[in-house]
Image (cartoon, rainbow, N blue to C red):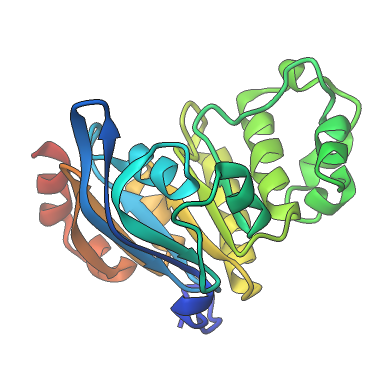
Length: 238
């Protein structure tokens, strides 16, 4: 049962990444990392800086080459697929730099993915008043709503968000997390989020994964991790 009350679906229909090893040149970052997320489930990826969180999402998205392991989405093997093919198969990611075009308006961004601001505004109402504004003139919180909204309107099988709240006020981060929770509760999407506000993300997630040195060291219900403050602090302080 999800944090929002909806039952999660079959993991085979969501994300199944198994035994991933990846890095940059001779620097190996991920070591036998596995991550499974079912449709309707929201999973928080936690860990101190350098633990491999961003590399994990990039490897799953096909943006970092893997030495071994497999990536499946909705049962389809995407291990050798290009990043674009993975998006086409329903694996959508929001990078930590948001991937937006400062000179384009908010409306133009949604037009590029065949959607409209109105659809995203159902989750993030503030976007309704920003349609004609250049993204470069938007605040950090508004830009992140655009980035996450663009991911949502593609109706992905898997949505991965890296460093959701980086540079944002806690209240703005909470609104974004609530939007991701609502997406998971709709039951069609597996949601993965890397987040620095540990308490906030675990309050809405179903599970939390703790990474250390490129490995998953804990994979537990979010409530169990929240209750173990000492263990979480040890994971972050190393």
